Length: 286
Image 1 (spheres, helix red, strand yellow):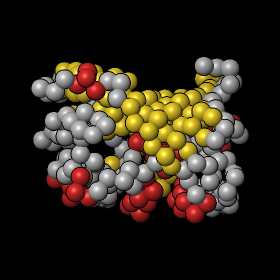
Image 2 (cartoon, one colour):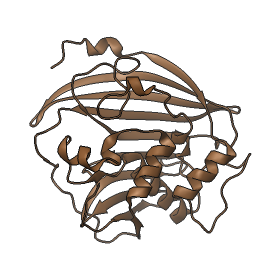
Image 3 (cartoon, helix red, strand yellow):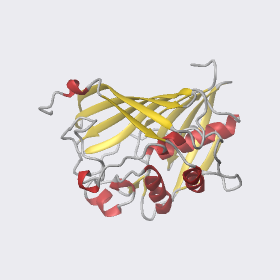
Image 4 (cartoon, helix red, strand yellow):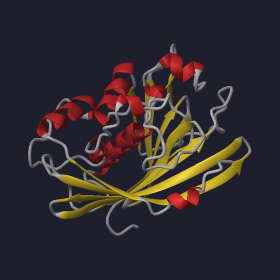
């Protein structure tokens, strides 16, 4: 594995300031919102998970790695493994954030776990985030970032079938402009999402990779629309890459099953198999 003492990075913290202006909210809405609705204006609540647009990185071009990510070694440990994925997350929501709020993000590296898997070494870096608004702490979030070697060919995990009797089933058209816009809104230069030659020739994906947080946002939107209100808890986990492959159907399935009166299991999928699993819970079910 690495000669680096990865455990020494546990407990590192950083603080950032950010927010979403009315103009930025209009661009996010134009990309992800229902065109029948108006974009949020100053003082309106931010839709859940829009805080992911509030703290875009400001890394100079000279400090980007080959894959487009910021080079490691500043806040995150400088691992030698070259494939990075935001694999899963858990969020608890308090008071809604609002357009125009000055926000603060406090981040702490909670754990760094090194593992040996059947396909090689893996490191999981778990980062805890607290989003603070003028009204106090608003979101508690855990992000799990996975680091792997880049394989010499596409070797996806075993496929898991989509549910047979969903209470919700819709589709989302996926396109290169959508992936580009999402990358631009988050200022995410990871090339697997917009650079097809890089995705195919360097990281050996058959097509462009649909962002994990984009899938999570689509599932959150489906949960809110189905129940009519925002959940108080949401978690998600990627189980298979979702791809935009030249010549294939450019659609993402979005399904949900009802666990009980106050929770939903949600799934993205393609060609009958899952890409992301998520759970949404409402007050009193955690």
